Image 1 (tube, rainbow, N blue to C red):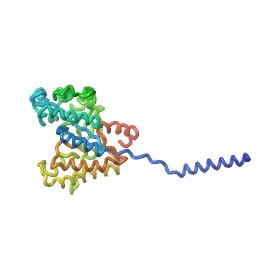
Image 2 (image 1 turned 135 degrees about the horizontal axis):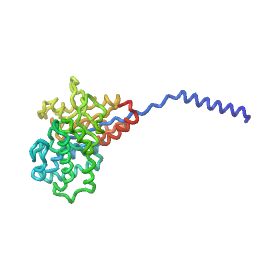
Image 3 (image 1 turned 180 degrees about the vertical axis):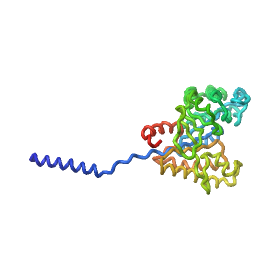
Image 4 (image 1 turned 45 degrees about the vertical axis):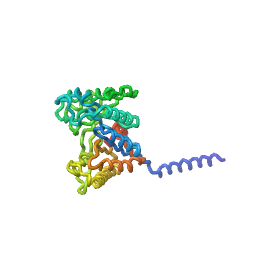
Length: 335
């Protein structure tokens, strides 16, 4: 081939490639996954442990269980030694385990949850209001929690059944906290930092929001979400819906109605973030089936239709936190 024809061919090739490059639309960055964070406060009723673990398995969701530590002791064995700041020894606002068999069943559920990828976090011990607690008070409560978790198998009379790794789990793996009643004080953040926690989930935000940071502790907040015929905002938690729907009084006859209202609220809150900035959606629940189980049934339906989407991840706070941190590093403008 003559040299000038080869040169012309190469020039044409480069020119065509440049034209194609200019004509090709710029690649859009894939949107971040929509995170859905579901948590349960209390984590005591063994029947609901089984129900929630089954729900997670069926839907692909992973939960955070904010465990209250008085459910790892009976009042006679351990309960008399527990003393919350500002209260007499042997008191708990949520009671204690009824017997060792109940504790044993709960411990097996806790370990099963951990092995299945769920998170165990702290809800304190006796579910007291800490709005006036000092840093020292909170640290005292955290210490009682750690001791109860470490010694739980002994308290259940089944020390020989304690799984390998439990001691390390009790000592190092409890990185999240939610205050009872979502009630906090100025002493909480420094106590969380000193006690080695990574996050606190005790806040309330006007809507879904990225976590803030205080003293290197990530602070998550349950959002206000629109609900009901008038779309009035309510905290995205089953108890708050219970109060909204029936003034906090059990009403089983309208359970189906309350279920539909709750599901509609969950769906709308999710859709707004999914089509928008994809801020993580947090919803909170208790180990109590209020209004005939309306809110747990709505949750089950919501997770069943949501968690199997490829661009959705239903995760615990522990799993969400590094994902959010990575997003923050990659796209500071979004935070």
